Amino acid sequence: MTFMKSLLAAVAVTAMMTGQVAAASRIKDIADFEGVRENQLIGYGLVVGLQGTGDSLRNAPFTRQSLTAMLERLGVTTRDLNLNTKNVAAVMVTANLPAFSNQGARIDVTVSALGDSKSLAGGQLLVTPLVGADQQVYAVAQGAIAIGGFSASGSSGSSVTQGVPTAGRIASGGLIERELHFDLANQRELRLALRNPDFTTARRMADAINAAIGSQVARPANPGSVAVTRPESFQGDMVELLTRIENLPIDPDLPAKIVIDETSGIVVMGENVRVSTVAIAQGALTISVSEQPQVSQPAPLSEGQTVVVPNSSVSVEQGQGGLAMVRGGVPLKDLVDGLNALGVSPRDMISILQALKSAGAIQAEIEVM
Image (cartoon, rainbow, N blue to C red; front, side):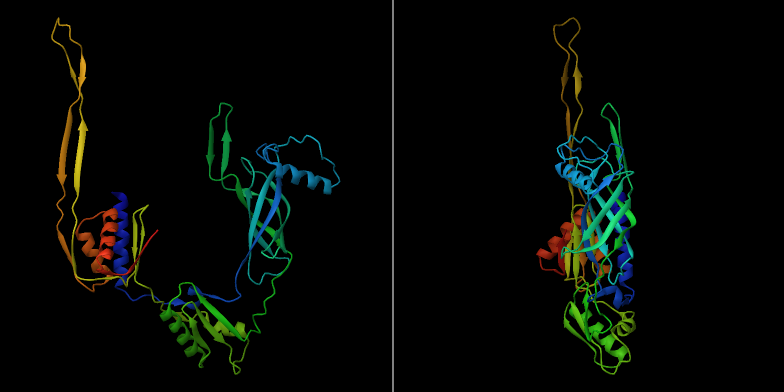
């Protein structure tokens, strides 16, 4: 009941918002600039200094091989010896290399256990090269790991775990060694990639840029991108041009779409959803079966036995479902009011929306997650 009230309250707020004029969004908030992007890095390393919560070398042969190879590079020969430490863990290290990062800058890295380690608390990541998709080293990670969980166990087998103790982060633990060169300033043409491709939004974006610059410098190449060309008469480079257009307000156009999450019962409807004139009826049939067993006692001085006699009670309750009229071409607020007038639950609302789509009475795309 609490969930249904919260959902209906959220839908009511959405319905009230549709009556207001949609707030304009900046270009930088609805589009990405070509070449201005992050790059993903990955590496394999070792974490040392664990308090007996590391990998079991017998069950994690890759940890044994990595430990042996690392010690040999440091001049310690341990090959063919019986290593039995549990203070070392093999980990995968990931990070994002920001656009236009300079050599020597620091980035955050994420460390995740690869073997059967129970916790990385108190661990120290050794020097780990981080490579990109081209297998080139772009950063090196090292440092103490901070985790947000813990795990504790007793000798009797009882244990308690909070959060994820086998994953953590190292703030500013990555040192950039190689830069990604992209000469943005001298570019003659650049594309803006819309995060939600749409023909109307692309046209509005191009028109707003042309009006701000005073010439036809932008054109929609397709629903997902707008090409911007730096004119010869522009006093400045591409960076200056992008600075002038990234804060321009745009009203994005949204398709008529309904998103349904059947697992949690959440329904999200866009403001452009429209329905034809329909009448909706919804009723519920509830059948309750209760068991109240009774004890049967034999007569005094008889040879009978005390037995349990079943006693079943069956009741049927028919919901008072009626017809609710929803007028055609109504906005989202009237559609929500019509569905709420039926007193339906979120689960029944999902079934009604799917039935409206099957009947061809709703002009919207329904996406089921």
